[in-house]
Image (cartoon, rainbow, N blue to C red; front, side):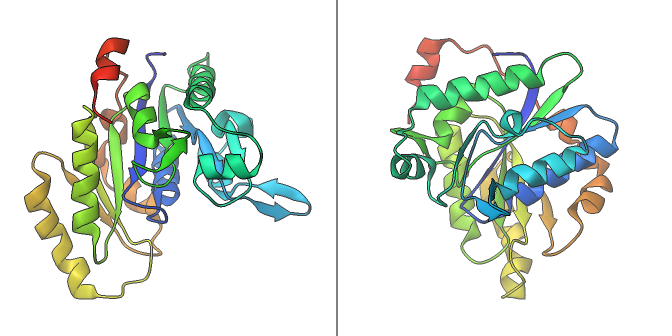
Amino acid sequence: MTGLRGLLVTGTDTGVGKTRVSSAIVATLVAQGERVGALKPVASGADRVEGHLRWDDTERLIAALGRDVPRDRVTPITFEAPLAPPVAARLAGEPLGFDHVLEATRKAIAWWAGPGQAELLIVEGVGGLLCPIAEGATLADLAVALDYPLLIVARRGLGTINHTILTVEAARSRGLRVAGVVLNGSEPTADPLVEETNPIELSKWLGEVPLLAELPHGSDLTALLGGRPDLNWKGRAAAPRIVSEDARRSIPR
């Protein structure tokens, strides 16, 4: 594993806006003059465009980088079906083992750590923290192996308190660092009172984990985040700690 600094963006669920937030963070860092990389180790759910498969999350991350990079360095493992990766892999007749995911991810990180590529890396997960990412393994297992701080993206609406606290507890139980929580308007406002009161109530339960931002639906996130130097995405990224394999195996799953 390289000493490349990184931040792993996970979510409380599918569809909470991880790619929207990840892409905006990447674009913000690029605008600040940082040499940043983007990685989504596994993507499932492709569109067919003029006969070719296209993974929207990958394309949005590359667009945020503002430069052309090999797509397999941004997303080394892809599946067409819009399902959890191991399920999509089984349908494709390609059972997906965790060793394969970890090896592909580490190779991509090593590429980004190469001369002139990146000084810090934004990694986007798939689904929520406990989403299966390979046979017998979840995104949390990959997070433990990479040991980057987590940024948790949560919905602004009803149910987010429970989902966010569960995600934070799952991360803490595995010894993961949590850089903070972002509430994202992944859908138009359905209940203004819920969105108004959620941040106050959620902050009471998060303890030392900061609630970093509330991002309105449909807003220009790059402009919004670029105007918030206090968020300091570079500072929230960190290199992996030195953790022995025995210690990693002892972390609860």
